[in-house]
Length: 81
Image (cartoon, rainbow, N blue to C red):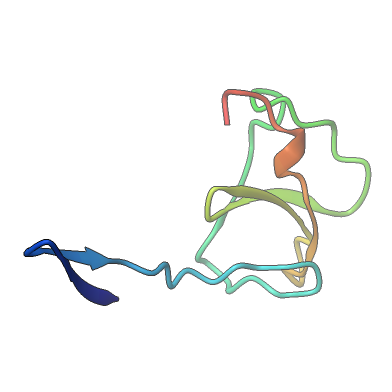
């Protein structure tokens, strides 16, 4: 967080501290939820042993046993997401 002063007005700039998960990273157990209504969000059917998870305003493909991130599917969602 940074404090600055411009023209006598004090402002605070907040910096996001949320982790950004990339392919190969592992999600912490119990912190994020599997998407159960993929068709509502316009996501294609699951075609392998992975699931969709909503993580920090993104949709990730995640291995259900290891919680390893396999890919980012955010760009496949529709306006409902």
